[in-house]
Length: 130
Image 1 (cartoon, one colour):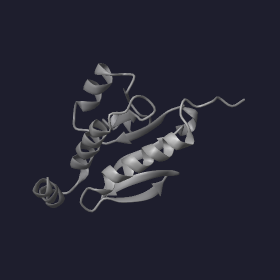
Image 2: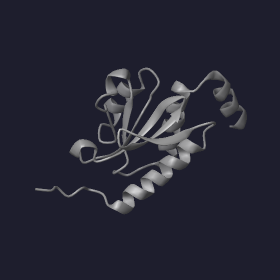
Image 3: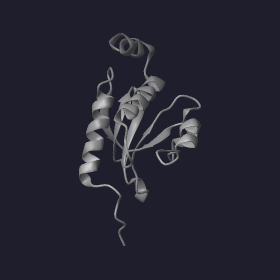
Image 4: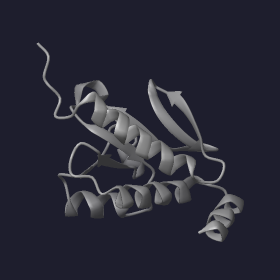
């Protein structure tokens, strides 16, 4: 028995295009498939893109987050933010992309994720560009 997802293939493509654009606009960020999903790296991973991960029914990203951000955002808006499996215990944040998405906010979350893992040299470059 298959459950119909609350989003379409076109939604997945649009979301991945927007996430990819945000991630790859950051200094030395790269993309490769990790654990079957598009994942973005700057030395270490900072964003993972997931479409119905293990049947969870979500279109989402999992991303590194500053200390305390996960609890704050999940408590404030649990319909948009969640604690992702596997990496949630490390403070990573799940961001739903199958709800009313504010792409400027998603970009800001991605930049915060990048800041959590990027080397100081690249953070200085990001700040100089910004």
